[in-house]
Structure formats: structure tokens, C-alpha cells
Image (cartoon, rainbow, N blue to C red; front, side, top):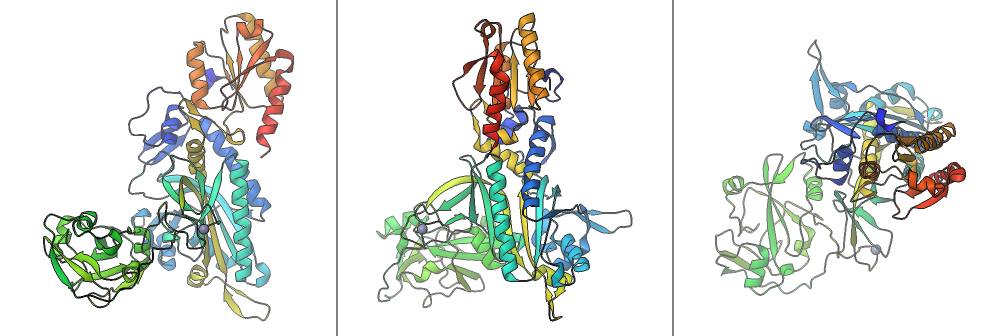
Length: 569
Ligand SMILES: [Zn+2]
């Protein structure tokens, strides 16, 4: 490809609304173009990378015994009502009406469609197992599209669905997919991590997420360096500090003028944060909830949301707190009536806590769960953090950041039961088919690859998913010797099926080098009068600082060998 013909232009300015590195670099390199919030065109360079990623995915899926199909984006809302997932997906689901006033949705995922297919085409245990996938555009009406390709409203996803006759069969499908996912990321040249995850609106029992490790990633990964435990911070369990059980003392009201934050109250009363209880107020599907946790811990809103089984959870606003009759800064579950109280199990780990008195400027000493208040619901709703104790060994948690690029779920039978997707076993007895579902974001993977591989100058593509493998930078192309050598190398490489972007533009070396660094093509060849005088071509890997002069007559061989070694992952 000649750069002068390439559709898409690089730009020097960092777009003001682009917060993430990948968003900035994808826009600056001219690889994506926004149409409207969370909706992008993939320009030719990006599309080449997307197709490479898709090919790797296809190969690994087919190797894992999956068959590719294509299901409709346009889906009748009734199948979402049948699955019971219209409400959990809520406003994320794109609704539309056809000319006959029938309600349709744009598919955010395809469990409904495929389970309906399974109910029609799977009858007997002999029809099982089945593993079916597609690579297709999906639609989700995100409340806050952001991060370029990280959180979008239209996105490309690989979704796979497994159908098995037994829990062991599901285990096999699940493990096979886990390995296939790891192979995909490895073959893309990316460092990934598999972690325990929350299953959220998709539902189901076990689930794992795949993360591309990147300092700039939006997800927090908690892991134990001593054992193999790793989880999304949303889900991570940990060992809470055990406090001794003391003899219960009498409740005592103390004045705490101006002390509102739990850390201030603890300091004022000379107790440790772990000897206090803090209360946080939420609105769960419009209902006021007070969540109580030991003062040394924080609430994990995902765990809280799961415990409450609500679709929408947010912090309560000042007006809502007042309307509930709760005194912010001095709130506690003691003496509250007609308010749902949810507690972390840490409130029973310890005794004689300091808590609010529900009276401005006062707190209570010696508050004890059970005696002084009761929780309507109690479970682990605490947030794990770096430094938390591992519950599986005596290690201490560390954390990393990452970008989620895949999510797999053991769904079980709840969908097949709703769709009547059954099979008969060898004895003729009917059972619901056991399902799993396996998603992989393709555009997200492209963005995550950039989050992991870049420097201050631009993208550093791993060879297997780079839009082009080689960047030929011709300098002083009006010099016939340079022009002839550059054209010759370009044609020879193309003849060997090497993917080359030949910068044939009449521009200064500075501009060309900047663009080469920004686009991040893994291998750069600079052909200039000075290099030719020395008898060669400057050969430079994008990720290295150093370059070397390679003789003209061996440059093609050298390029081919380098690409081979960088592609065999
Ligand atoms: Zn551990």
C-alpha cells in the first residue's frame, strides 16, 4: 500500500474529549472516526487489524470444536420477556418499533436467539454437545459511552454458546474455551490474565474474565502473588481482620461536635477505625437503603447490588437522605424504623463499636449488632484492596490494572428451561440442556492492545495484529537512486506477500518518522541517500530505540526472517 493513497489522515493534536490512551492514539492515527456518541467507523488501517484478530479468533474457535453461524441483530422483544432478561438489561437494551407497531430490540447478546434455535434443533443426547459462535455487531445503549472503543454502543463481538447434556460436559466446554481464549490473546501478542468475575446481568453461576494487563486499564485486578487467586476487585473475596469478642458494654451517647467522617470520629474518640461502624446510603431501584460496614472497610457496590438483587443502585442524594429521616454524618442503624438495613458480615466481627446516634453532633459507644440493631440482610459486601489478606493462603493481595476483553459464563439451565430447550437421554427422559456462553470483544481487544503496547510517540503493534508488517520510509524520493531502491524493495516484499505500507509522500524526514512512530508498524525500513551511500537500508523495530544498517542485497531475507520470528507466538 502506498501511503499517498491511504484513506485516513494522522493528526498531531490530542483530541480534547479522548481520555484513554487507546482512544487518543486511535483518533490521532486516523484509525477510527466517530459518527456519534459511542459509534465509530473503522478506517482501513484499523479494519486490517480487526480482520487479523477475527482470523485468529476463528482459527481458535474452530480448533475448539465450534461451528460458526450468523444470527439476526433485529430481535422481537418477546424473546427477552421470555428469558426474563428485559428488566435486568433495562435501558441498556436498544428498543425500536416496526411499521406495524411491533416492539423489537437490537441484540446486545444472543442467548435468547440461540436458545430458541436449540429448542428447535436439539432433541436427543445424540445431538449434544454443540458449540456455536458468531462474530458480529452488537448494540448496547451505554449510559456513558467513553474511552473510544472501550465503552461503545455499537461493537464487534465474538459470542459462543455451548450446549451440553451433563455438568461434566459443561465443564469440558468451559475449560476448552478458557484455553482457546488464552491462545487467542497469546497469538495476538498480548499479555493476558484470567480472573474470577461477577456474572452481572447475564446471570449464571461461575464466570471468568480475561484481562489485557495495562497500567492505563479501567478495571482493577486483585491477585495473590503467593497462590493462584485472582479476581476483579468487584468480586474479590478476602480475609477480614478478626477482632476479639468483648463483654458487651452499655450503650452510651457521646458528643462529637463537628466530627462527621468516620476517620475524624475515630480520632476524636481515640479508637481505631475498625472499632467503628460506618453507614452509607443508597437508592436501590428507587428504594432507600442503609448499608453498614466496619469502619476499616469499604462497601463493594457490585456485591451490594447482587445481595439486593436490584437493577439500579446508586448513592442516595442529600435530599433523599433527609427525606428518609436520616442524619448524615451521624447515621447508624440503631433505632431506625421502616428503612431497609443491609450489613457487611464484619459488623459481627468485633463488639462495642462506635456508631452514629442519628442525632446531629452525637455518636454512640458500645453498639452491638443483634442487641442494638438488626440487619435485614447480611453478607460479605466489602471491597478488597491491595494489602487485603488472601483467604486461601497467608499471602497479601497486590493489584494490577487491566482492560476486560473476554467474559465466559456457566449459565446452567435457567434459559433452556424458559425456552423449553430440552433433550432426551438414553432412557428417553427429558432434561433441560446445560448452557454456557462465552463473549470476546473484538474492537475492545484492538483498544486493549494499544493500552498495553504504546509509548509517548504512538502505538507499538505486536506483529500478529499490526495493520501492516513493514513501513518503508523513503527519504528524498526525488533522488532517482532512492526512488528506484525504495520501489524495488517495496515490490519485492509485496511479491513475497509481506504487508508493506510504503511512505511515498514528498514530506520531510521528521514528519514521516513521527507518522511511522504514531502508526506503530512493527518494522521500519528507511531508505535515504545517506544510507544507500553506506550500502544499505536502516532497519528498525518500532519497540527498540536502536537501528542497524542492513545491506541492500539481504534486506528482503532479513525482513522475512524477522516477521516469522515475531509471528510464531
Ligand atoms: Zn493466596
